[in-house]
Length: 329
Image (tube, rainbow, N blue to C red):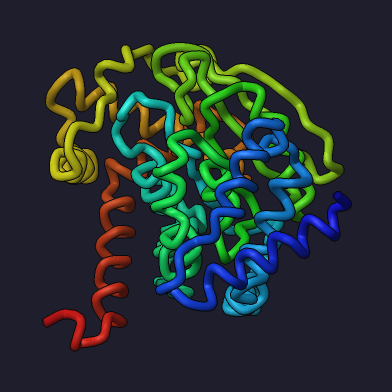
């Protein structure tokens, strides 16, 4: 089957799935997901690219949201960035990507996180509720659970930010996915992005050991290097046991502690360094500096000065101001 034929098949299936939410997802789609997994084609960059392009085109999201950027937006001088992991690494760590995004935004990086678009030209942080943009994920959830094994949809989430950030850091759980994601990002039009995977299989930059970094450059070339907590970032190593996220409520308390400057326990200090490392990477990718240790300083200043907390507070105020009054009742 050619690429165009595969795209046509995928389009017909997704159109059918989305035409009527009361109609069950056809068993043929389960067969397609199974065949892709068994054959290994769910790791093929052209196949992944086709899924990404088709899902985005179903709702004509890309151009519409990109058009909402400020007229003066300069992707080279002030790029819109995102940091996100594929998930599924099994370590249940603190939600470092969102926290690192907030800290980097406090340092002046323009960040647009996937997950309703809430964005304002005066803010350096925006958050997207992905379910509003991609209902196909909800429609496919039952059949994916029934299949019981990872499918290509486990890899698509980080690639489906509707705003199409200029630069991304994507965390993966297997090193062989690093070059694949770089090639997919290049095929999807990214000029400069990074993919990371720790030696433990964490889809973040790790505090426990070295992390592989694949850099995608504007000419499509890919380079590989290894990041070390001590040598690269100038920070101590910490066991992954200290990075566990516990419950959502405990994660929220930890986030507030970090934003308030309360680094009381060994766990607080470990998670602080976890955040600083990942925020530093996003700051470096954005072009604010080319040195990871300087990135750590900028990230720490964002926290200590209160800029990170001010960023999230401004975001919350903006979010509440645009929520319909009826939904606040």
